[in-house]
Image 1 (cartoon, rainbow, N blue to C red):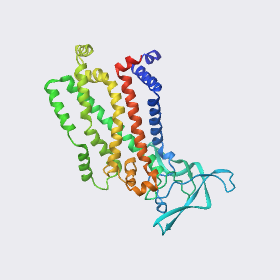
Image 2: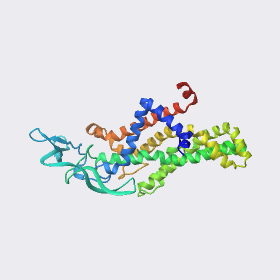
Image 3: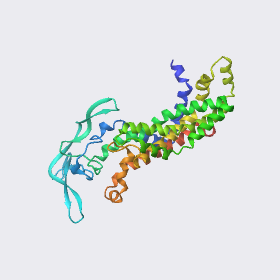
Image 4: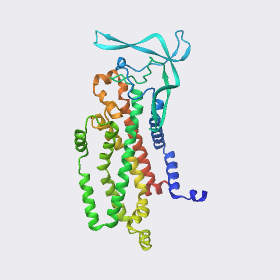
Length: 369
């Protein structure tokens, strides 16, 4: 059993990929960044002090909460915060926030908080850190509705970072099977199937989503709207993959192992799924790492325009809507943090994807030996 695992070609390929990624410092750092981002958003409800819907209208547009570690005499103290007091400034016509130093609210770890479901399955109410009410712990400040930006950013990342993989679970099976059938049978079957794929590729995705947003009822839950966005993105994306798979199958179907499969009586579908499509694994790994950033940007852009995830639910895209106001950006630059995380995730995926492409390129692999 152990010998069979040691000689497994798939495990050997993954081992070689990891070793190459480890030697490529930029790709290895990008991989660590991606793992860190996904682990953080996976446990977002535990890490965040509040839920995404928690709000305090009296702290609307409040700045980040400073954490103090020195007492009045300058000595070390357990971390604590002060509650903000909001006062109207008649000179600037704005609301100013000043810390109320009359009472300290000490920082506690592993505290009881609002109930949640970890990973959508495990119920719990334990939070990594928090302060006693009415104290407020807002590491990035509050939005216009008095909601904690840090908590919403972590929880919103669950949508922004998972939409790519969820879409690929639909795109890859359809594109692989469709392209495999077209390439294997060829002739008129290939012509008809490719014309259908070209029609799908010609559909303007943006206007399709605009039309979808217009016909959806305003009160539709964000979970259902999220599912519709995934389906639409997948519907217009599988055709491009199928064309590439079809071209690869055309060059593979004349190999001897395909003729051997036909000789022992395997059905065309079995030959395609069990013997031809596995030969495209290298391309699919590269396509996976390079396709996810596109879906992340698509969801963020749609939510920013109001066509994706709607308030009060959080995603990185709709959190950036409040940053459209230049005055908000100047006074509260941390509102751009979701945009920075989008940039970081897309950059990391692209760096890892380029490294995987170089590793799986036969010419590149031969040159590095």
